Length: 521
Image (cartoon, rainbow, N blue to C red; front, side, top):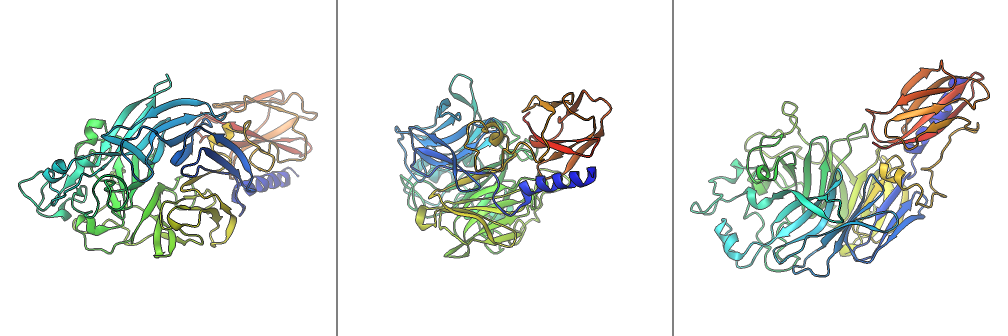
């Protein structure tokens, strides 16, 4: 009987993650709106943040349940697509934890941001004059340009933040047009680790758009903690890139240092090999958005890069493409490239042809069961919906008419969702089910949430317990132990990933109760 009950419990736990329906929440804030929404699996609003400023493009959820939000600063002196100038951390009640302005006549944050632990990485422009651009080897421009850079902000504990790291594309340029100027190389193909200053010709001048200063139009950024690397996407280059984050700011401006030994140079690029003189076919035909790493925690295609390829199938149909990057197993931090060739793979590794598409903006995610979450943007003529498809391409959640540019998915075991439990409307969500058994849970688990050590008080049980197991949210058993102390036992979750776990206790009659515990380091 004990084994039957255990099997039933594991099946129920497995259903939480591996059913075909949407489980968890979606987070979004439409561009220009003051309100951030958290939507549950039944299309209900679980929580809102009603704020005083407009979102510029994206919001993200921290592990502590707080919101990181890019917002438009009223004092901006530069303007362009998805211009911001300001970033804030907001608690679940809508209070500002810290606030930082990154806006002058010389630089401005825009589009995307991503979390680097507790820090925030911003995408930004910096102004380069006509004289500076031409002196660097550009082929005769008559308008200023705004190349991309990144700044990493660390909260200072006093309501603001400090810049702790920077990377500038300006430090990693090359050109083959004028040997008398800096960055010269006789053959662009000799330097795939650098960006050809002349590879994008039509952009320049003040403002955003096709003729504006937004030269590269970097629109997506993500961070890989395991590799300590950053990926980003460029719409106008039709390319995605990886750079090293393990560098100091000084090393990031050079060609040496960091885990890769390459400083701030490009470690990997994909989508348009002609940008670095390779003859292979272009694999991103037009716009690309929202490059991100698929979490490598056992889910399908973990470690791949995933992009919203706006014209991936055709001019009117987008695709979600997965790219298996050729990480060099010998170094662990660089990517395999045969000199003169293009970076592999030669084409996308996986593809989902979108049911609802968009010509711009947009985002996607890969969930723990392999399902794909799609946000087809409302901007630039897109569908403006969020939805989820399974491995067969069947829509299993949505479409939800969000009219948003970029959304994010958070599953039940995400620490930020766990931290929000007392703030959200959980009536229609399965995330906060406390027991998977019809048997009353008469034993006490504390502390919950825990930062590692779990105490299980069995003294109130009517019959002695004989065994307990610990399973993760996927139903995988991580610990099994016979019980020889019927009053109190201890178990440590240290060394395991943050998230939701289940403590399953079996008594002498074979009855089992399961209780949820949240682990937050």
